[in-house]
Amino acid sequence: MNEEKYTSYHKEYMPSIIKWGRCLNLLMVPAMFFPILLIMIVYGVKPNMAGATSGAIAYISFSLPYYFTELIALGPILHVPGTYIGFVAGNTRNICAVATSSALDVTGAKTGTPEATIMATIATATSVIMKFVIVFVISLAGGALLKVLPPQVLTCLTFLLPSLFGAMWMQWAITDVKLGGILFVVALIANFVYRKGAFSFFPAGGEYMPVLICVILGFIIAKMLYSKRSAKTN
Image (cartoon, rainbow, N blue to C red):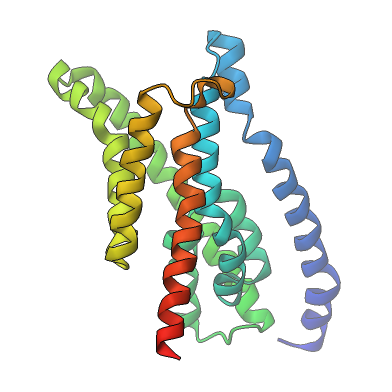
């Protein structure tokens, strides 16, 4: 990169990226609620606050650590522009980072250089465009497929969400069988107590309490177990 392009990169390109990256990331926060408002206004469907609260607790407790770790781990791969794009479009780890890493490896661009930053921008943007094209096509095909499936199959699809959360639990439990087993028992007990109406006096019926209990006890039990292991190791 010659001196003229280097100056343009630092004085025009990067300031513009940071300016629009900040604006678009901040605008994405209220934009995420737009589909909910659209469904409420057009179809008159109101969300179940208990379910929404329970889902929010589960999702925040799961994804909050990645807000910090992804910045540290993926920053050298995605660089500043790719990080902004990835945080807006999603799939930073399994799509954006993979595409960008491959592009940097093929081109031989050195991480942290202006060349690598520009290449990361192109690779990340391309991966996002392809992702949306593929998802759009699959969405159309999936909608048509659901219309011809028999009722028995559609009934089975109601178990997809529980299966997803079960798979997520298994994915993390195999890394620590003891902790996973303890939290599995805690989840069963918390769910049993909830179904007996023990949390009915909480706002929105207390549907979110089993999740909240598992999250809090999960942190406490994990801290105790790992502290104990660390003490034995020392």
